[in-house]
Image (cartoon, rainbow, N blue to C red; front, side):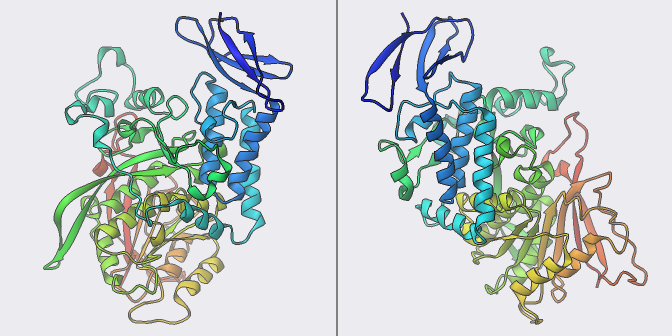
Length: 523
């Protein structure tokens, strides 16, 4: 007879056994007067004992979310909240929460709405209650990094033998044609089905995270320092697979992106590849289900394309990016590049990785900006957990306001023009900046005003690289300046690069919807 122990946390440990009637349903929750017994039913319709949760446990879980966020550890707060969301959908899942909370017999009795509201209200209180909230978050993250800002996320070769790797696992269909059972389905449909079946967090828990030593006082005393899980290489988003078709992965708390980095040498006026390639996997956290309608809290296809381009400028066809970095690399007193509307910060992290491979380790060489406080917090997390936190300065900025742009320029460059430092950034980059990409064919469009306010006027190597859709309102059209009546500097398009360079075909297997445009001042 299947039995489930009842643990009353308000009394000494007395176990009361209840009989749980097997039902031909999964994740059945039996509500009792003093709590809920959660049981699951396996494939043979046999009842499997699970944990017991009560209202006191419920408050404890929500309190843990609030506590970690209050301490600036938003990443752990997100992980607990997402774990609770997972258990509300799949009570039969094995929970990692029992390793995080004092009471090892625990469950999430909260509704998804209560979990999301708790996370949202706690994070908003942090963002709006302290003008220095970004510094607080950064300090908390630094405390949790035990490898001096050199943490890397690499493919674990021990997870599988090399001869076991199959492209069929990376692609849910063959490049040579569709299997008979998939006739009538688009590549996008198959990619999403593959992702939901094998890769989605809410179907498969496979991510690792560290428990910071400074915060272990709030955890279960037997909690391991690292909660590990299975490999996730097969679910990485990378050129050569079609996993990019799931972007934006709106519900996912994180995505893994596989990148190829190379070191380039400048010889005789040209950039050439030097040494072996270096593969790495970036771990990018998202707001996901916790801020479902916050467009800046997830990675979008245009941002993914921009990050791929910045990770390998030569393959992308924009060596000018390396020229812009090299031109200012001898100066550590001012930032080199700025990203507008960074979102989750993937392009900034990719550029910082590229600079490290080139041997540039300047502190705060990149300024990553966004008008969303939640996005700024995500950028800090993603930069540090991918080993480039010291290279990225995260700044809250509304790039639609000219006064904000002027203040930012003055903050980093002052009110002077120096031949070495200049008065602006050598590289500006951004993706899907809807407000800026509107009616760009006009000389007085906001895009040109913004670029003129931030891009260096003294360095001929200064460039702008933007990622956007190839048609519609977001397509960037450079106007023909005749007399510069708008009062802003003239810009010219150097070239356009299709997303097909990185295998970003559409869900219907058509040429990519996205492209890179490279701009500079007209001299």
